[in-house]
Length: 381
Image (cartoon, rainbow, N blue to C red):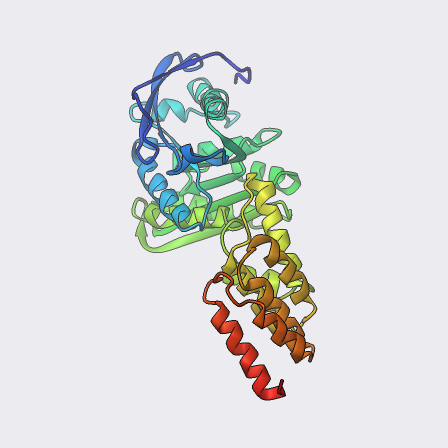
């Protein structure tokens, strides 16, 4: 298998980019020695700033690109996952040769080895050279191509951070190889494995076997999950699996989930520190500076209430002043802190100081002034 960077060029089948639409790119590949087509979807707001974006590579792009691109566009619109660059590799007429594996080594060989290098050294390099990309990449595929995508994990350093393995037609030696590699990998890796209740029996068995190996991995750098979709077959489950795979791999980015709340925030000595760490990790993983969401501030306040760690409101208020300057949130948390420690006069002052400030979610200056009035009624002026 070749691992040297080979020169190639792309010829474009469009004139003016339309970032909300699919772009078709004809690839004259030096590695494959033939022209191949890829599809590209850039984020809606790509041309409005200097933001960098994760990259999602979709194998079997001739039929899987659209469901991936649609889900990514929808989920990122609601800021549940980050906006991403989606690249689909069309394989109609090439799928068998692209997935060629040597029967002895059970690794990509001949045309399969070339296709492996085509993705690694031509497609990814082109996207990174021509678009603003964050150092976070994902690859997804179905059956043969799901198996094929996992071979990238066997490299010394994986080119991909996230893997969406849908009903993989797993090679016999791969489960043990993946387990050995993932047990000692230093990169953060997300691996989503899925099959369905009425999947092709052989593939369902292979997915279950792979799960028996990966679920036994003991490495904090690996985030792994396995899902069997009920009342679905080999093709229909994919529509359900794609959004769930994206939510799993981008779970760090999204608002605080119920699972995250219970496992991370309610077990923390300082929920506000956990909130701050969450957003620092977002910046580290995706090189995207996302301001702390108001909904996450309020969720963290719920944890402070449940744990009764009132001092934590002080730190939370500082984070709010930085992230939501000009809103009532900083004064709200300061007021709660003084109220909880039994200093109603200072709590009233903080609530009254919110007069005229901008709303923060359901909180506005009227809500805070009402809290001040209630404290006056209880404790007097």
